[in-house]
Image 1 (cartoon, rainbow over the protein chains, first blue to last red):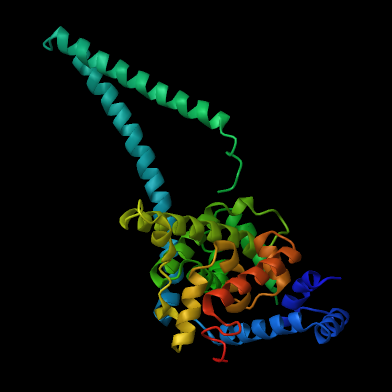
Image 2: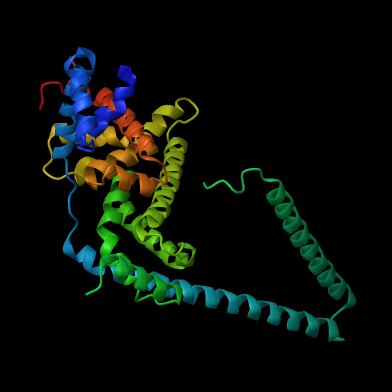
Length: 148
Length: 195
């Protein structure tokens, strides 16, 4: 085994993750290799500094309110979905009825009706076009299954 | 009395049936781990709190994707990590855009917002270490956080990262090497005589 092969054992040795046999093998190598012994000392020094660092514990209030915050957001999430679906349905229904009223109303000038219908057809074409483009590029995206 | 595993399995089954209350078992058990891991990954309290809560919400909504017999935490950790990495990416992009990114994008991306006010019993050495951790690559920072701040074993880290033990060891080696380089703990370095 070369020194490079002992790098993994060195980490395990530092973190007390080695079994007795691995530990013995590593200690034997280090006793005869000043380079690895020096590296181990540097890592020990770094570990001593790192072990001293702890993070500030937040106030108890944060933990007491933690689940409440999540529960509210879960509940609100369901509320928003229901609200959005209902809003979309109502908007489509009201829009359809309003357009129907305008088209049937003899008092509304023909040019307005034609303009309105043309605008709706244009919107529909744009929507279908964007949708097709998204589907086209999604199907050809080589990285679509890659977890980002 | 129920074992921890049985308790999780029962709670998981109830969550799959849509019980938000059952999910409280997971939140109470892992909220501190989630917060401190997020804090280690993104570096500030407000973002850590928000991201850890968001991770639980996403976990709740997708809990049916946890395969039967699998543990909750390693799966949850992936959600939390992805959220934190995505948050960091946006933050770096914003920083790079707000500074003169055209002239010096690498300088703009270097300050990762790792403010040492989250470190207990601060001193210069601890502040330097925290800032150095903030400068590590995401994959190197996470092994340092999981090992040193979460006290996880190599097996637990490997399970959480969906990799083998050898990869964990190798990442730890390079993460520590980089930290030494940043801190100057090697011979002749700034912190050589500190400990």
